[in-house]
Length: 186
Ligand SMILES: CC(C)(COP(=O)(O)OP(=O)(O)OC[C@H]1O[C@@H](n2cnc3c(N)ncnc32)[C@H](O)[C@@H]1OP(=O)(O)O)[C@@H](O)C(=O)NCCC(=O)NCCS
Image 1 (cartoon, rainbow, N blue to C red):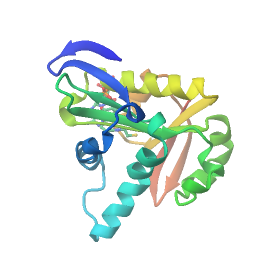
Image 2 (image 1 turned 180 degrees about the vertical axis):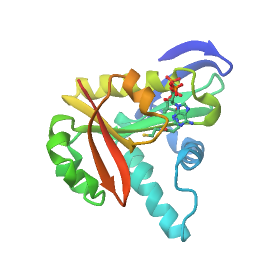
Image 3 (image 1 turned 90 degrees about the horizontal axis):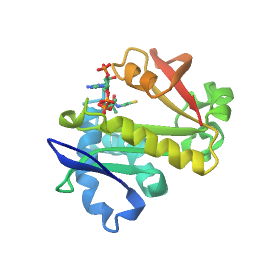
Image 4 (image 1 turned 135 degrees about the vertical axis):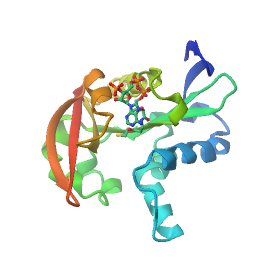
């Protein structure tokens, strides 16, 4: 899927599972993940690895069909969206993310969940919107009747999600930190 020209050339969106040698792109994806993450320091390399596995690694391994990369005209990774379609409150793979149990009524209505990040230079160009629409189209075609994202209540990305049709269905406290459950029917 090609998009309009920008300083990056023609930005394309490609499903991870359609890139035969996608593992060679993992360092670029990981760099975007860690740069965008609010958590910047880790007690040990093992803690850093667990954090990566929790929010990115397992999605790439388990759900390459539901993962899409935005790449510039040279093939460099500008950002990604990944996620899963099954209700995470009822999916053993996500039992380590405790807040899903608090949100189980809502995850039943909006089961697909996503994680999206762009490199700093690729933001504010509409690329995130293309990734969201690609993920939602994939989720809807595969039977999900709703999609959600969880983010910080005070995050700047709230206006982005609102423009993309996501509505705040709940605010919860997690580790003393307010999180919002943003949902869109499909
Ligand atoms: C949120 C994000 C995916 C949106 O993609 P995008 O292509 O930049 O979005 P668009 O160009 O369509 O819209 C710009 C919107 O992105 C969001 N955005 C831009 N820079 C951002 C940043 N540094 N942090 C958080 N959100 C940002 C804002 O909502 C902005 O809207 P605003 O100008 O009204 O404030 C992208 O900006 C990003 O990766 N931000 C940092 C990481 C993040 O917040 N990821 C989502 C975690 S739930």
